[in-house]
Length: 328
Image (cartoon, rainbow, N blue to C red; front, side):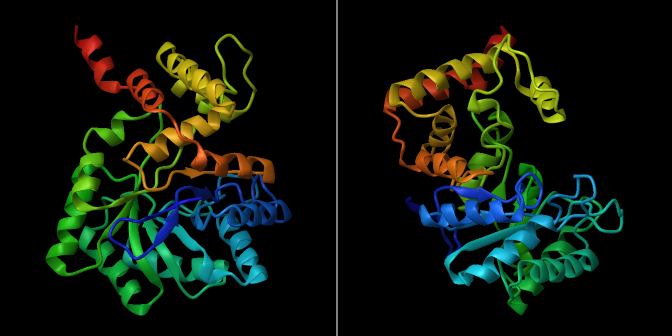
């Protein structure tokens, strides 16, 4: 597993980031421990979670993932060997007061996250979503105070538009605050336009690390959803059908499958390898609920696509050509 520097930070992260959204939800604590152990054993060191994981599940209130991760850190005594990223801003426990990026909420939320994670610092603390109701100056000054206090090493943004990220960077520069050093966008082979239109160039210009989520498009790029096949009855499957199951994306899937067969690897590994080799991403996020899945994800970092394969995947998923066809 090779590593990369995260933007202008001093953090050296693995080329794959393990998503913690499943910990304490579809992956119970003992299984989560085996997944985390396998990830570290395979050379991974970068783990992403959020305080809201997994508030959407029945009987959950948020903080479940951080709690499991904190138990693992305490049991393994390896805090200095891993990079922990978590997020703040999404609504917790159906309480409208527990959301956003106000000073009040961030200062309460960070202490709660530190307690659950059983650590005295967070390597990367991210704004989970933009909060237009709170002035950027207030949010960034609060984050800056956390950096000064040693509770947070670096800060990042998730789900920001290019104009808002530009504005946030300008505020940090003008006020002398710590700036957003990373961006967490929705980015994958079938969903490229949103990031590539403006955010990609901005991140490169400003040397901002990119740790994209939904790397496998909610499982669509793994090949489990195919044309003409019966879908699972889950809400997740219904969402995949609405967002991704169309002729364009099935054409992309066909190329992913062809490349996978050529290398005798899974389609999951091809989709991740394209992201890793794209030059746009520092460390794509992917989740696993078993040791076998973890090893499959890790193997993607060792998969070397040929130049022709990379170009074919990029061409079939190119949104520029789709726009041209629509214009014609």
